[in-house]
Length: 182
Ligand code: PRP
Image (cartoon, rainbow, N blue to C red; front, side, top):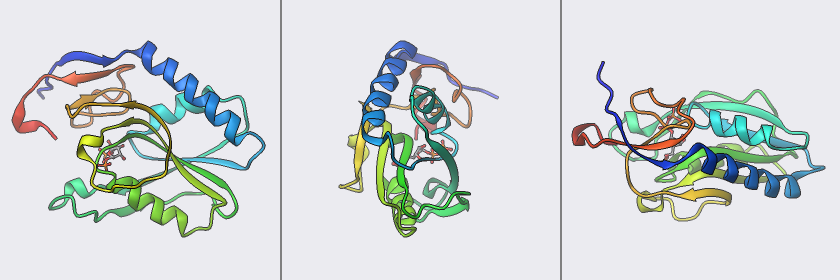
């Protein structure tokens, strides 16, 4: 197995954790006293969800979905299939979709359509990273965003290279090896 090295650190652990605490402060202000359910999609959002909810001093429920990404198909058609559904009911709840990154926006768009059909009281997005250079879906209800990031192959803090590097506490730029770049 050959895994390219990290060329540089884009966001350090300290930068990420400081931003996570700031986002948690905003979220706490907006969601305290509400029936809050934070939903993430496996696997990338796992680390952000874990740190964000631990930084929140309020009651919050969490749940997970898994999808088959359009990336495995024949292009960015938006064709996404639900592989693991939520355990929780959404009716009347304040649902926040927590993502590690929004790129094209196709994943979030699909998830929002799925979640909105279940009649939540409120539905919005919190994403740690946003890469607007790759956006296909123009409008998404991104209520909280950690960082805008450049169009580079990023790994760490949930982001992977062939399933590796997700567990880095920082976000790095993968050394170029153009045929593997996503
Ligand atoms: C990543 C990320 C988002 C999605 C964003 O997941 O976690 O869910 O890509 O990309 P988009 O805006 O272009 O749809 P990925 O499909 O890589 O799966 P993973 O979470 O298992 O890494």
